[in-house]
Structure formats: C-alpha cells, structure tokens
View 1 (cartoon, one colour):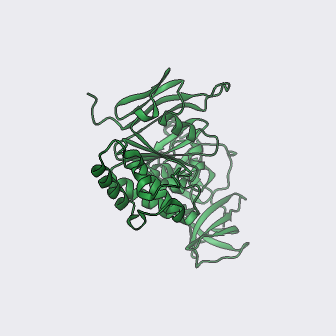
View 2 (view 1 turned 90 degrees about the vertical axis):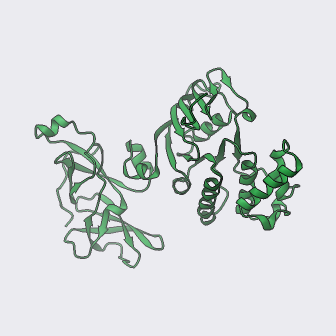
View 3 (view 1 turned 180 degrees about the vertical axis):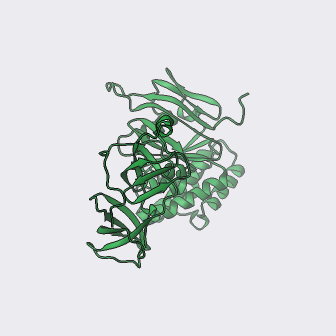
Length: 373
C-alpha cells in the first residue's frame, strides 16, 4: 500500500514527442500536486502546456518519465493506461454539453453506474454546489456562458474523480466574467475537496485559481511554485520576465544583501544570488541585473529623485507609468489614479523594494549611480 502522503499527481522527468517530429514537445517536465490542491500550468502558445494535459489525461503516450495519479503509475515508456481507468474528470474549452439534455440530465450523464435514488441525490448535490438550482430543468442554450461552464464543472465532478483536468476553461468568456468565474470555480473545487489541474495562457487567471503554478517554456517547467514565490522569487530570468510586469536594471553588488542601481541602494530579505561568496569576501566588483516591479518604484512628490513620464496606462484605480531615467533606461511605477501626470512631465520617485531579484548581468558594466535627478 502506497502512503497517502504521496502527491495525488506526480510527474517525473516527462518527455513527449509527436510522431515524425524529432523535437520533444515535453522535455523533462516534473511537478507534483497534493490532494485537494489546485495546480495550473501557464505559458505562451506552443510551449507544451496542452500536450502536458493531454498526456495526464492519457490521450497521448510518453517517451520517457512517468505520470502517477493517486499512487498508481498511469503513463510510462511503452505504457499508457486508458483514460477511463485514470479516475479523472475533464472540462473542455467548449464545455461539450449535450444540447438535447436538461441541466440535471447533463450532470447525471456520468452516473449511470448508480441506482436511481443515489444518482438523483448526487445530481441535486452538484446542482446546489454550483448554484444552479433554479436552472436544473433548463437546457444549455437557455444558459449564459458562465452558467454553462458551471454545468460542465458539475458534470465532471459528479463521479467524484481523483483529479479534475481543465483545458483553458474560461477562454471563450469575456475578461470580467472570466475573473469572476475563476474565483467561483476555485471556491467550488475547494468546497468539494477536489484536486485539479488546469492550463491557461492567462497568468491572472492562474493566480486567481491555483495553489501552485508552473511556468512552462520550450517543453520544460521552469518553476513550479506558489504564485507569491513566482512573482517575488522567480527561479529563472524567463520566469521573472514572463510573470507580472517589470524591467531589468544593471546593478553593482555591495554586500551579500545589498546592490546599487542608478536609483540608489537596495537591500533585500534574501542574499543576492549569482554572486560567488569568494568575490564578495575579496572585495571584488560584481555586476548583476536587478528586476524592478512597478510596485518597487513609488511616486513621491517630496523626492529629489526625478524621472520623466513617457507612457501611462490607466487601469481604473491606478496608472502604470513608464518612466525614463537620466540614463535613458526606463522603469515602471504603479501610481494611484488621482495622480494624473502628463506625458513629458518629471515626477518625484523613490525606491520601496523589499525583494531584490538578481540575475547574471546582460547589460554593459558601467551605469550612472543615482543619476535620475
């Protein structure tokens, strides 16, 4: 008997290639998901995220590595368990509801193994869970897109799958509905104790729904972590660039906790990475690139440090300003929307960065220190 402490979903060193294509669509991907957790893989088009989901579902075989669900290896080299033997539920982009069946009959479709009373009770339970009691006798075409999505979710959850898989589940919905429904679906999954994995290209959707998020690039999981860690402690430069907004500035390392950029000194909570300790011990001059997020640069009218507004994006409660420093480099700043400055105006700024995120230098070694006045 395998320990119940094992992850419900465990993927190790997975490699997948399509016939006739020598390149691996999935190239050594690994991740794990505990029981009751919601995971999400994000990435740009062609990165391999949908192929990964198809491999988990058993739609395609694997060349190397393993996929384990609920303690059972379901995929490996030369072995692929049938989809119906994996204990999974599926929610597709187009919902795949039966148009001629009522909502309650759509939900009951996967419960034919139950007796009439047990089936009816489970359908009622699912309808209540997704908040569609008033529409139980309706047909899919009578529902909104968000309601249809909840029917599809209820149908997938009804058989109590060990793992729920969702492929771009909100891609056909408008932005506002997508955000609201993402929060609702997370609440439904948590209420039912369901372990789920979804793929999306929308990182905000991933952050709203998932406990763990993986950033996929060229068939590899660059980092599998909590959303907070992806944003504040990206493991690779690709993750730092992909997640959220930000810019890189050249920096000189002062100590294991301090760097200097042209806006001044930064002190982080964690030691500066990519700098050999021997370099610091010997007083060597080491250069890195520092990632600055928009919330690291604060608008401050009283500051003597100035930068020029070159672009601005209004987002309701705030602006994202693109600011040009004296060196010509640009940074981003998140500014409350009642500070409506004109393009070309110089505004006061100061640094307020708790997380110093560094990567090997790609910029020229020289930079003007504290020159944006």
